[in-house]
Amino acid sequence: MTSFQQGLGHKPNTVNSSEFQTAKILALSVSHFIHDVYSSFLAPLLPMLIEKLSLSFTQAGLLSTVMQLPALMNPYIGLLADRVSVRYFVILAPMMTAIPMSLIGLAPSYGVLLLLLFAAGVSVALFHVPSPVMIARLAGSKKGRGMSFYMTGGELARAVGPLIVVGAVTLWGLEGFYPIMVVGIIASGWLYWRLRDVKLMSRNHKKKTKVKSAWLRTRHILIPLTGILTARGFMHASLTAFLPTYVQMESGNLWLAGAALTLFESAGVAGVLTAGSLSDYFGRRKMLLISLICAPFGLLLFVFSGNHIRVAALLFTGFTLLSTTPVMLALVQEHAGDSPAAANGLFMMISFLARSAVVVIVGMIGDGIGLQAAYIISAVTGFFGIPFILMLPRE
Image 1: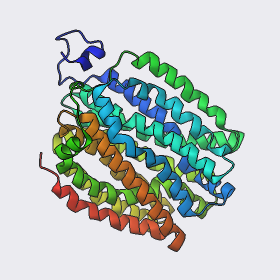
Image 2 (image 1 turned 90 degrees about the horizontal axis):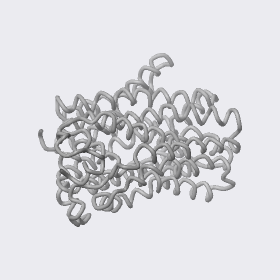
Image 3 (image 1 turned 60 degrees about the vertical axis):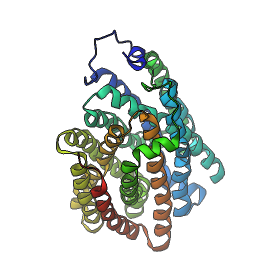
Image 4 (image 1 turned 30 degrees about the vertical axis):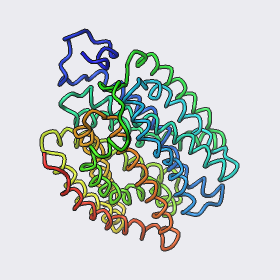
């Protein structure tokens, strides 16, 4: 009987380690949804922030980078999560993300906006490192399915979040939508009641692990995943950071811009819900390969097609591109050994840094030769992730 299981309130010999604990997985997935609704506010508001503060695309891309900067702490948050219960990271995260993200419309300058996004980024890092490790343990032998549930909460939030914030701005204006933070504060209170007895610590919490040790143990997985994340990151940055801006520049309609991001993320919900479970049966490598062959073709079709086909292409791209995350999370947990949170922290750091560095490059390309060209370059770059998939160990 592990201290982790005791912290969940289990009686001895009542739970099999391979059992899929649906209720607790759903609770953590709901907390992921609530949290990520707020962290999704930046992209749909970016066109208005660009106009208000007279920003270039490069400066706009840097906003996302600064929000991702706290990911540098992820391996150390993971070490902490392997040693002590960090349930309060998960419980407080909706409130700590909701407050700064609800205030970005009030930012009087670019510097203040950067500070608010950095504060939100710290909360994002504190939430996203321990929670997937918790999911992996609660999922037993069906880690892919568990990660699909968990990532569905996040992708659904990024689908609904743009509509929520655009609706709030329509009602109250860019500088008046801040009361929306109340929902996040209430959510943290609910999570305290729901998760107050859950201990998010590793089974080996008394053993001290170093970041270097965790890296050496998982580098055969993390090195190829770094290549995959970087190649995928160009497509991800183009669509998640600049899609509303791209659509608004073409249509002049903020609602249509927000709806485009919602369509993309909604397709991602379906992708993450199915890909993780399918990878349990057909293999992680095979699912990643299918995704990184299909997603670049979908993005190119989106750029070059007419309006009716463009919607279908956007849905196809969202389904294939976003479906890779639960598969990669499951891969990391399967090879993490006795330091799962530290390994996940390393993966999350690589993921966030790859994406945040790339989004600035995409912004610079957009400033130089236009966003459409940036989309084409991003799609072509996506194909360079395929050789790294072949470097992953076979199941």
